[in-house]
Amino acid sequence: MNINWSSDWKASKKPSKQRKYVYNAPLHVRSTLPTSHLSKELKVSLKRRSLRVRKGDKVKVLRGQFKGRTGTVERVDTHEMHIFITGIEIVKKEGRKALYPIHPSKLLIQTIDTNDKRRLGGQK
Image (cartoon, rainbow, N blue to C red; front, side):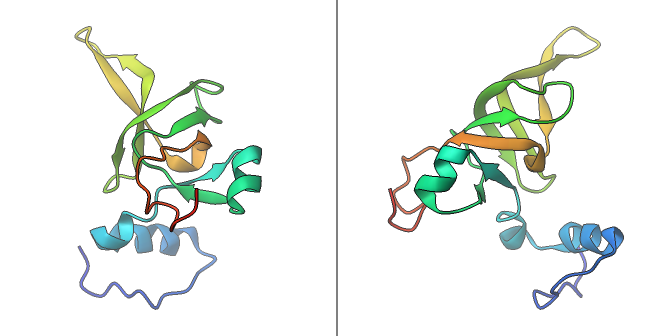
């Protein structure tokens, strides 16, 4: 991890600098980065465009070989920026199945897990 990481960094047009910012970010900042867009119904009800993906959320895959499939988030890897979804798995060479990692930008949140009352800052 880079000691020179700064939270004051605003933005850059260069994708390499954007990737470097994420790569060097500390874990407490990185945990807020895996966000996905909300479905139309959730956008209207929550008055937000996107939300952090959490375990228990129901999501739909928008891109890639699993496009159109829906499932529940089983695990979120904040360090590698991967989301693992129940039912979306690949068969490995030795025959066992493994969950397939998907980037949060390729997902659409359809329903959110409302077990945590503080998740939306006191909202429903």
